[in-house]
Length: 219
Length: 219
DNA sequence: ATCGCAATTTTGTCTAACAAGTACACATGC
DNA sequence: GCATGTGTACTTGTTAGACAAAATTGCGAT
Image (tube, each protein chain N blue to C red):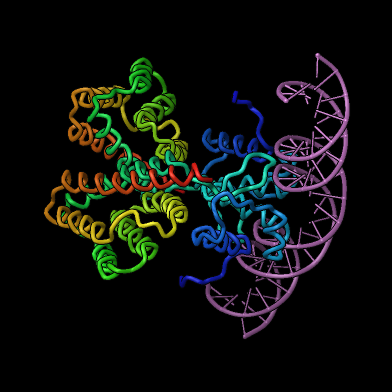
């Protein structure tokens, strides 16, 4: 069946709210009252409620019973856990890819784009970087693994919305490590690839956590 | 804070429906109309709707737009994908555990219970078996990894509700393979542990898929 | 200044209703 | 006979308004 753009009202609101969260329009900690959301999109409160509940389930918003939903504010511990989790999935992914020496086309393309954006703003690197890692996971052709990783991607993007324009890593270094990773996969060196990946993610995770720790005390 | 049993009405309905699905009371393919659910629990339709939507998101129910929700019927391809996905997570988990030679206490206990239930009905093995594998993942102490695995566990239990009393694997063999796995972790042999795990899951996955394929043609 | 209480705000759930989409049975035309 | 079109019944999607329950906030008393 051809993919149509039709979605329910709730889905449309979810989509828009996600964008506004990722773009930083809705900063971490922002309150999202049901009535406000309903008013903003000119829908009934239950509709807005359903959208908010979905985003809470996704982890983009947080809310306790009878309290208003807020854009999730990630702690340094959160970012470390997010990166540990993605490391677990991606490590096994690169091992499996290395066992068949399968270098995903989409990963090569994404890394080429990162290299091309050498002099661009750090925020522009986020998208191709996420795509690169997603390509590794998607290459396994496991719907569930991809879905799970997609959920993680949401939180990764939420991390990025916290740091915004801060330069945490040089794009040259990112591209170089990605390249090395793909070479090791092509060479069939699963352990080596897993190790490079672990270092790559550990490094990013540490920088991010440090940055957030500095930010947290200020707020 | 102490854990209280208080939950919202929606949560309570979700919990009960989950149990009824796992127990086989609601067989795969069963229709769950919003009004019926609402009537059954004596709640308003929107409340029932919220519960159903949650279960659809979880993957326990499936539903297209404007169609009534049904208990998900898993195909052989589904079970293979579920087992591939859990293999990815668990493989990396046992590697990490082996690197520190950390044998989770809870895993030992669960496997002891499986051994004790040598002559019990196959359906009774499901619970300690799931617990064993969960213990390996939980030992990583990564909240997100555990949450993700918990989602997978739901689908694994759904698989089990499909086969019900069928004896697919001998409990002796399961216990033996689990024991071997823990020994390799204790010995610090990550690659070996990952390999044993892969075979363990591959075998179970194949049996399950075959069983479901046989079942599917009949229905 | 701290604690407790009350008012306000916000969410949780319900009832009732209409709109919109799907599925199935039926009739029609080739 | 078979494919196509139509219509009806059923189910879900969304809305409106309302009340109850819980949490936050601010005020007042000690």
